[in-house]
Amino acid sequence: MRFILVALALSIYGCNAELPCNQQLSGSDFRYWRIKLPMDSSRTARTLYYFDVDGKWLPFTLRSNGSMESALPDDVVYLKKWSLKNDSVLVSSDLYGIMCRSDTLVLTSTTGESRELIPVGLEQIPAGYRRRQ
Image 1: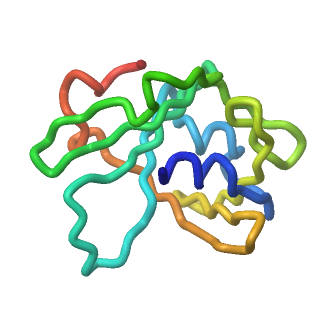
Image 2 (image 1 turned 180 degrees about the vertical axis):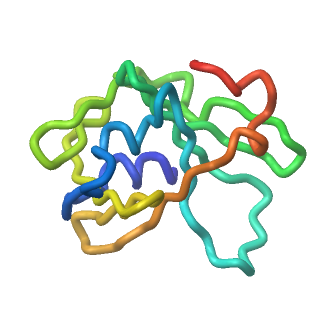
């Protein structure tokens, strides 16, 4: 599952000097992010990551038909909290790093694989999810 990869795979390089990472991650209230995929990617669903200023995070699946649902399995208990600790991000009970650049976040796994997260505009989010979760 992609959200587990994200949760297991972050390492920190530093944050944007103009905007602290916590503000960039959650925006002024909440923010959705997605993994940047190649332009030719023909996925029918995308995993989105929700972060809010109160330290809540949630993964969601956004389908091509515009519907959205939780990407967390029902039979597993997750701590749905995030916080910054030194130069890393604590998501659930796991410590990961994060690199903030302008309006993107770069995630690097323990194996060295990097992924870039980009913000998702609220116009792309179904109306029922355009609020704090």
